[in-house]
Amino acid sequence: MTDELDQKILDALQLDARVSVSQLARRMKVARTTIQTRIDRMEATGVILGYSVRLGRAAGPRMIRAIVLVQVETRATPTVLHRLKSMPAVELAFTTSGRFDLVLQLAATTTEELDVALDHIGEAKGVKSSESLIQLTTKIDRR
Image (tube, rainbow, N blue to C red; front, side, top):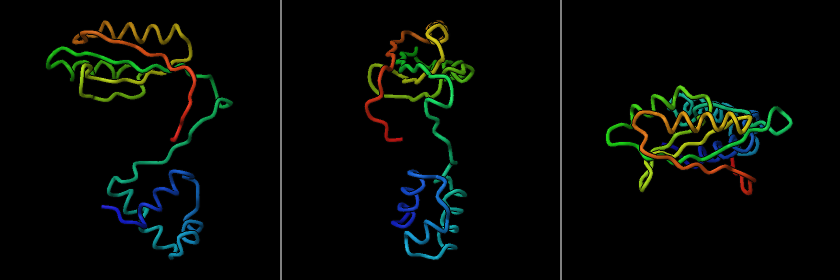
């Protein structure tokens, strides 16, 4: 359970995970040990799962991304997910309601690599059908 101070800490860390505990304490007008204790507790309870780096285009090869909507045969979701976990191109997988059972996000450095990944998904035992949507231009990114 988080309170208002925890939420302020989380908001600040989401904007800049490198901000120091001392800076957070000054901004929030509380003791540095209070901030550190709160962060430690949120890490221990799983509220904070980790810290990461978001890479810009200059950091490496530009990734081609696709959203893939997948229909799965009845009771085949665990089998399909097991196959998807072994595919490096699959970045994210969500179960969903509606016409499709899974929504995937794929990333590849070439269209050929993406094509192979899409073929592997379509051929996976338990997959009834899939539809892919290639991401073109990012218009909003709140990460």
